[in-house]
Image (tube, rainbow, N blue to C red):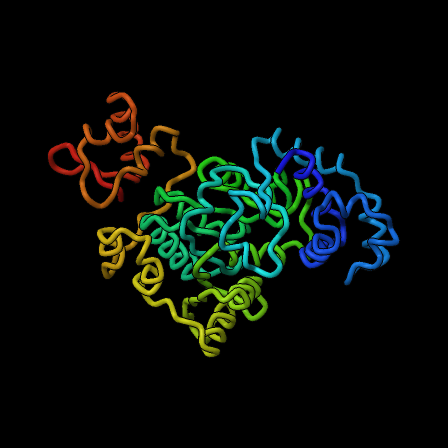
Length: 371
């Protein structure tokens, strides 16, 4: 698509009141976004589902507005993804209300990998956080991309666990790039944008509102083969994501919770209504048998295996890099030097710092493990 056509597409997609359905109706009527933007108001008003307000908004929109948005996105080091072009998520294409434009910051290639959506309550229990961390860690270590909504609570736990496992994660935003919400997730926003991918249908600078999060949820589920609900109360937003997954024909798996816990009411109701229970990692990884390497699958379904504790925020860059290379099996210093790509002195200093922080322990033969 040439720059003028791309700019017109973006401009039309971002017209207030023009959602996916009206966008498709305009394309059907005028064949191209540029044709829609050039159409007289009287013709716009004849398009099915177009209100007077929507037609007025389209008539007042110019291609130049789309150019400015594209330029802003590119100035941020991000990309515009459009359905007719390569790079737009394949799993989103058949979704009836798929967004006509996406803005992406980070590793866009992650959209081509098998993914699991992990969602849950903002107000979670210690049990919910531990289960969420185990599920995200196991999926990420097996090579499955972890998708969630960048909210506080279990969304943040899922993203962080995926990164700490050395895997990759996609954060779907309910606002535009450059807006960090909640503010407490600033460091997570920066890590996901650098080590994973941030994705949104909202233009740069757009602030979140009450209606933007349900819209975000359909993208979360639409990117994934399976949506896992870890912990959700009776009115949790995670239930909306489960609903969009079912509407999209995707699998929903649910972590059971105590029937006495208000935080598990939504989960247990999903189970009662026929959702698949997630009782062990094998239940999830079986859905990715074509993507999970057999050795990784065998290791992750071992009974009783738990991921190590999250890395402290106080660690330096070299310490964090070395820590992510350590596991339950002892590693020699020479091996860590090669894998970390750091000088021996830097690796030794990092290991000393990790021992002091309680992250690593030395075993016989000057070998180290993650604790």
